[in-house]
Length: 485
Image (cartoon, rainbow, N blue to C red; front, side, top):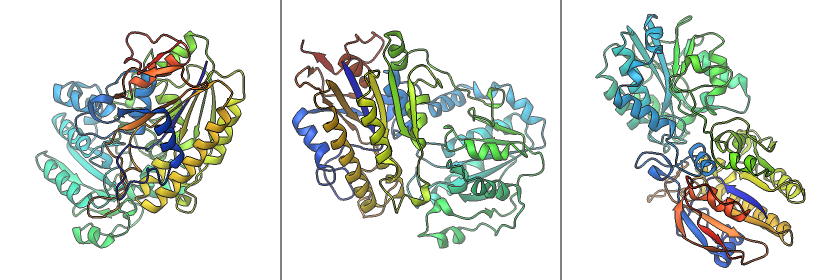
């Protein structure tokens, strides 16, 4: 038996409403599958996936949970717990940083906890002061993508209020996230970020009026401003990046590391190794990838470049390679998403169709990125177009599987395009906390029955193993399915 796990990134499950781009109108084929075959409703946020209460899910923790078959403590939760218990305060890197006259903290001013959280900046500043770092300068990177557009003024006020309790801390450069978070390889944009931090250009003074005047432009594009009496990053002064997820920080880190002693909360490939990271990765030694290897099953991972680490590194339990072959599709520049909400979906679909006809493959793990990447733009009409493209792709894939004795599993890693507007009609481009669907289409029909129709992303692994005839290990969250023969 063979199985395709199709992960529709950013496809939450909700009743039809204003701002929901994932409905039977935009995705008629997907909803017909749900009607014909039934589906389970899976939690993808909060404690069910290793996050704190009220924290929305994200692609990293979603794919990690799916691949692990159990909930794994998120990096943000690790950081918060280490601060609360005092473990972080005793880290050997603090004396290293205290040997410098000044430390610069750079992090996302976000309350979403997807790539970073403003709370981590406050915690790091607090511990730096306790470790006798004489001067700490915090450089907030405005979000407006993971956190809701328009929340920057309130979050900045909250950050400043919290930092007032920490001696020796000042605010430095304030700017939008676009040049910091780029992962497309646009080094000119990233070098503009580094230049803004190190002050090789003139900055206007930051004022609340300047930020207010910037709207309705995205706060992610807010140009660099220097806070009153703030400081830029000086020659060879150390910088600590407070991102807790690597993908949006690696490019900026590599450029910064060219001129500054660089530290981070996590490892950043090619820029910050374990020796300069407070919370290096803890790779898992079990999960779906290890089960595939143990049972001699050949798998293939397929995704666009922007989501490729999610079906490999994160799905593998923070291991770069366990087994299987990998197909990475180039992602179009994010600056062209508005003109091309289909992104590189046709190429992803073609690779999936090719894998379905390859007798060597037993399992396909594929990610379709559109509903998340386009959803982040906060444009309902555009997200609806992306949904239509995704629905067409699912139809093509399903048709290709007929008569080939493949089982199709369709799910998501978190919500996004299901919530594109708030109650007042304002655009939302951040993740939602809504659950996700889990659809099982077996070929031939009637091979499995539902044991449960509720659960979390952790139940997907054992359910997938059930569809390929492998008994799930007892430590996995239980399967939602049972074979009928």
